[in-house]
Amino acid sequence: MTTCANMEERLNDFLDGLLAGAGQQEVEQHLESCGACRETFDAIRRLRQETSMLPESLEPPRNLWPGIKRNLPGGSTILDWRPGWIRQLSGSPWRAGLAAAAVLLVAAIALLFMGPGWYPSGPTGRTVLPSESAMLVSLRAAETEFLRATDDLQAELDRRREELSPRDLAVVEENLRIINQAIQEVWSVLEKDPDNPRNVTVFTAMYRKKINLLRKAARLPSQS
Amino acid sequence: MDDFVQKAQEGDVLAFEHIYRLHVGRVYALCRRMATDPGLAEELTQDTFVRVWHRLDTFEPGTQFHSWIFKVALNVVLADRRVRGRRARWEMAVDDPARLESPSRKSEPRSALDLESAMARLPPGARQVFVLHDVEGFRHDEIATQLEITPGTSKAQLHRARKLLREALTR
Image (cartoon, rainbow over all chains, first blue to last red; front, side, top):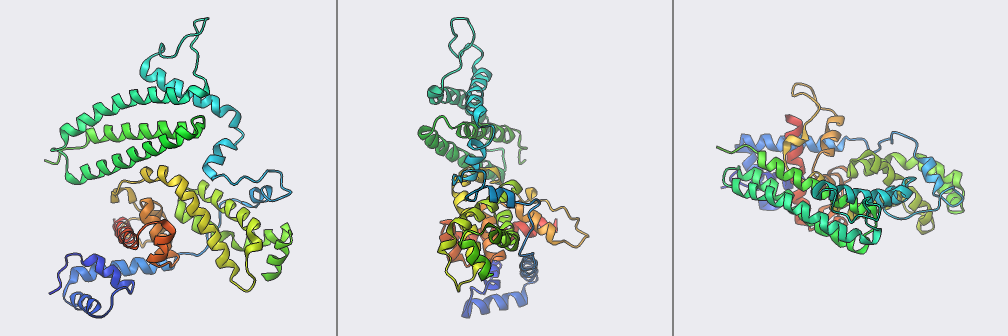
């Protein structure tokens, strides 16, 4: 006898025409006798109907042609095939200021976590920002400080592990896994291209996300 | 249409602008639904048409031009997704229906706008499979190839997307 267990998956397959023969008959028979599954089936079917009625075209909110034309031969811009997000940054009018901004960003991180004495002082006593070639060294040092912050929060999460609902814990852990993986991947990109300011921005954003997530996790209500 | 394509292939920018006007809505719809971010969708749309221009000589006369443009657009979106995906995945990875709040109230009939809005709030993996399967009509094996996942994962993501959408739209 067919039960409701795993029925949602089969209802989807049934609706998509992926069931045949006995499998199809089983679902049909089950639907005749089970009101709850019939309701689910109707909801999936309705969603499919509504989706099929979505417009095939959506007009962009502005005219994109001038931007395209500029990138055609004879246009005013040299064609650039780099991915959009890299182009957004390195090809933008802000390009000249971004390398400096990245250095300042690292400096800001360092100052935030390590205090003003972290960078070596120049002969006049003013703080000397690291050169772009020192970017990786700076980022590794900054990461050490990020890790101190996240380790403390992680310890708090571990302490509360038993109190949290399994669902909340699973969501937090899945997000942490993704963020950690992303951090590793950013590192591999940074090692190849340490002076790309976008990578630096992404790197710091990842850690901010991680810290925010751990902070939120620390404040999650207990399940009891 | 063939005339415009032929003229564009010969370097006629005005003919290409006509092609752009005819196809921009379809391309933008794909980009908008796959990427959700309006700025990124515009960028991908522009990238698509620039790429179309440079590949016009590879279009085979007698085949469907709109299908060919759509394939170019999908390739642009997926190539960008591969680069951007690592960053984007964590931005909306929380599998919580509460993030999929619908603008409509329960008592009001839901609209296409509600559905678009709820789709945009789906986790990226589920959203992309949903758009390709339920909106664009691809099969799971085709989606699996395009997104570099297994057909089983494609199916699981589709079911997850439908479930999250149902929950969001009936809240």
